[in-house]
Amino acid sequence: MATERFNDLKAFKGFIDEKLSSESDELTLAEALTHWEIENQGAEERKETLEAIQEGFADIEAGRLTPVRAALDELRKKYGLPPLP
Image (tube, rainbow, N blue to C red; front, side):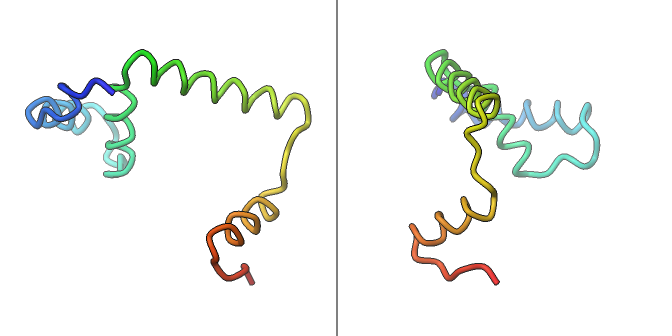
């Protein structure tokens, strides 16, 4: 991540001011932070993100899908959480 800008509080304030003046009122804090992280990714991080998205689309096109319930059950088991009702 472009650390110098990512950790620059004034740059973040300007970013938030811009979002608040141009985005809808429905932008959440989590969404704003996600936008900040994306906009401040370094070239390598951006490349890795795009490759992961492309792999996901390739999996979908090839039919390599896991039902949501099965995926959640697997994660819950992995992290020792109780099963869903």
